[in-house]
Length: 431
Image 1: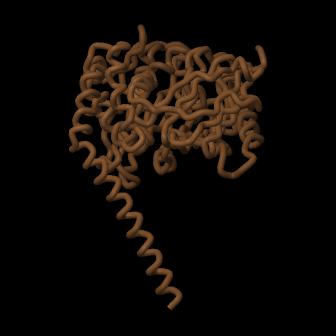
Image 2: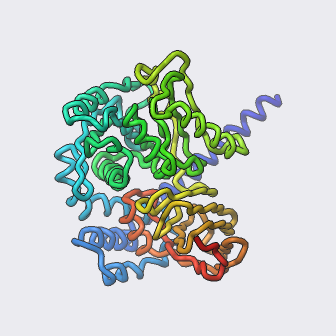
Image 3: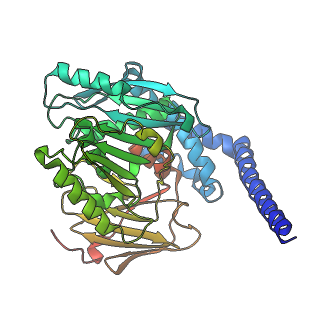
């Protein structure tokens, strides 16, 4: 009888969850069918359809701010759909049709194929980067063609897009220098807009030259990926910070005989750094695969997609550690440093409307917040280096949602509050 009662309780709980989810779905449908909902959708469509946003167009959204409390999730969805159909789509369409991504003067072609059927939540996207680098164009082109077929298909895990990306140059660091990071961000934006990619299922992987790219792009932009993998490569001093991988699965494979350019030593040192950071089992999910008897080529990594596939990004983790390693990448999840540089460090946590931040050599910091992180019906308290700098209610706005959505081009990074912190009150250590 105890087993029967337990099963009844489980069934009742599942029914309650089902009714709760259906209720929220219907509530969203009900709002979009009301005059208010239609007015919001039309205002968002007009905003994102204009050639560019202006202070006047942002102010025009203010009349809908009072709806954010009850309808934030629905409005975020409406904003994303309007964004996907608006001016950014037109701006990116030429590149998408040409199977390429451009950033400034740099251009990377790609080849993409669909594997299996699209999941209900959207396509996972695997970005695969080729070997080569520091070689003639024909060599890198050959390596790119190889990468188009390198990682084996695993449709049995679920459908996904496999994208083999050509490095934008033939330089030795073509996948791991300053011009690459905006290009990768734009590539993700492109596929979120045109291919209905699941923003929480974007993956990055590469071999040799591409593996160095994964070691650089991955930690710098860990907030963009569900999981990252590198093979036959190594971290670059001052560019690959393991501290940024607190919430992101990161794996790397290295042959025990792959000692050129200090690859093996660097990988072992990186692994040891991660082990020091992993004070709990649920953080820093990084793993090194040391392959006995192997050198630089022929590593057994071609089935790695099936290992990575289950991972799902959490876009708003309650705890972040961010060590910028250049002046290019200025945003990380719900944080922004307007002037990032080496030797800066942010340690931030958000719990029960209390945000604790520890800063090292950071003089400007912006927070991005929404109902996933805080309860706007209560005051939000922010402490920086032990000093309280904010203690007040914050007001979510549709204009902030739209501005931050434009910044990242990611529906999960549209935040209804963005604001600078008064760090001059917090005795922030000077560089």
